[in-house]
Image 1 (cartoon, rainbow, N blue to C red):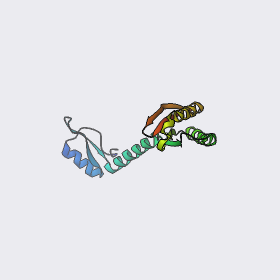
Image 2: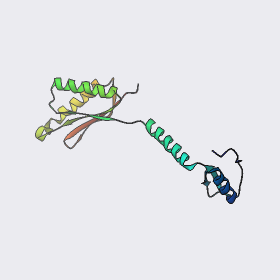
Image 3: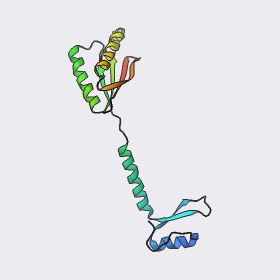
Image 4: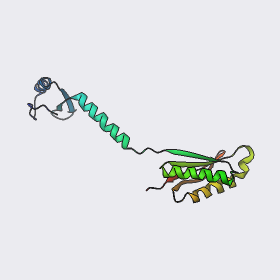
Length: 152
């Protein structure tokens, strides 16, 4: 980044400033605690721009975890179950995590064993598409289970 007619070397601070002004660049202090302090002649705006660009690329490459939810009732019938299972398969094949839960309304909490059986049946049928991260667990009026997609 140093201009063509500036040599790399050790310069006194005043001379380094003059060189930076002559090149119409900025004198940036790299490590102030060193003896003598280390400075670099660069275009600071361009440096910030490139740094932002690198951070954006890193952020874009970071894995984005998508969470999809499927809600069941404790007495969900077979057709609804199959319909929701197809959606679950689609979500897992797209790479999204799945949160399947049974919601107990009012007095239906007495059927919590049915809800657990339903979620375990779902986990067993989705074995080819995903792996159970958390077994069914009752939290208030919800019984929740998490399934992560299998790696391809």
